[in-house]
Image 1 (cartoon, rainbow, N blue to C red):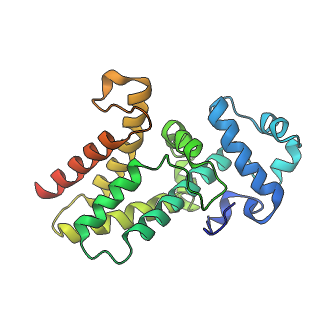
Image 2: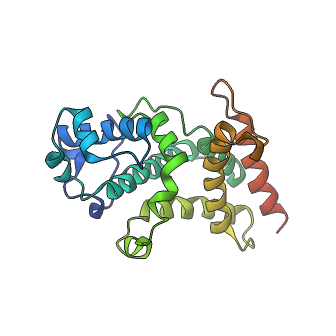
Length: 225
């Protein structure tokens, strides 16, 4: 699915690694397009198979069900963000500057990456609308024990470590980071669909107000501890 980025995910998310075959890669690319178009509730493997001009059986050879596929897509997104943060903060000594870059990456996550064949802009829309459905389920504890949320937790840990570099006495680093990440999605959703719930305006693909808000939120919290 990528030309120069190798995304490695938990093997328990799939029955067969979709990144290893042309059909598997088509499943991922088309599933992003189909979920983005229909929404997760209306998405089915039958509809995906029709869009791919393939069969449901071929999709079930890769994924047990559509919820596992959703977690796979969301996990792909977390690893991609992790890669972006690592690449853009490499060799930057200032923890404060690295944290500002993190905020910028979170704010610009809707921009397509030319190094992959994935439509990150569509995937970002899916994450904004559907990502909470990956863990807001009765099976969350069992899924967590299987390590299905490993990529999200790894990303939060990486950012939390930067927070603690800036303020080692801050007691809520993971709480703050997960709040910032969720806010980066919730505020986008509100801006587009429930604008009375946010002061952030997004026009002409300009997410600068979101970046300004997230930076204000995270640095204010760290400094007031």
